[in-house]
Length: 363
Image 1 (cartoon, rainbow, N blue to C red):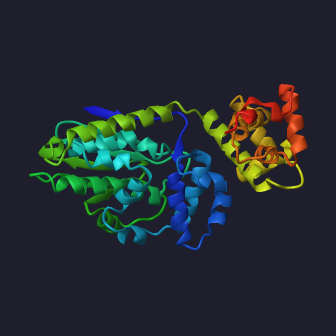
Image 2: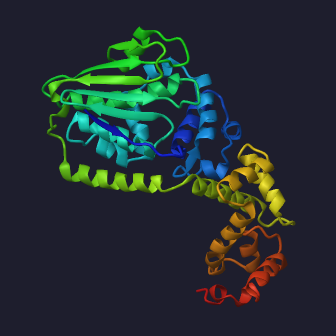
Image 3: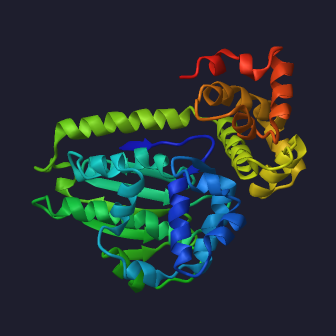
């Protein structure tokens, strides 16, 4: 039996998932600002769906959705609705999932590349000649979650339905539901998934079991060239994600929040000092300034160093922009006056910013 699994040591979740959660809660009357404050997501983070969210804050967002969720929402869903929202955030994924050589290979691809969406819940795919078992184990540090479980399995259900219509022989499929943190009625869940369902008391793992001779039969609609291209592109994204450590994610988040405050304070009459910046960033992240310092230190980072590195990286681009004055450049780096910016610049380089090559070479 072959086993297809993929895991990354530092779990993260695509910000696009969090945006979808907020959209769902908005329909339940939860304002976006309240959602962001409760989860600890800044407005600038929320505006960048390509960013990633750490597991601690994702648990807070998931808890909000679980508290307001109803099974009726899933019973009333539009067919292939999950495929549609996946396409909005990760168009390369359905391009491969719905263009695989067989149903079996599609589900293997589903498990392998789902970390691009979320790494929090463990998934694996076990397969042999005529049987495939796809398993989902919810985050071990939280109670079993009904809404996330149903979301996972419905996406798989969409895949099965797509390939079933392309095969000569039907594939038998059933759901084995573990603990989901709330009482459920098997008949109701079976109606949602449109397949036989049983409940395994005491089990944390949820499974979809498929059996049939056509499980690995090649479908006529399969386009080998396109699927190969999609698989290679997704593999590159997956490897890039695996190489992005927790320290990089934390540093990027802190820098985004610093830039947000600089933008909000631009043109003000006072400079935002380092302590005020730390307090702002810590509050946006749902923690105290001291907790932020400890988190940074645990990854070998310091707030002062991140602040300085951010200014160093941004300076050449800002100085070379012909539409910006020195006052504008300074305000975009957190300085309230041109003299404060010039003092900072001279202390680092030994000459004023007006003599910098980037400034003198503006087009």
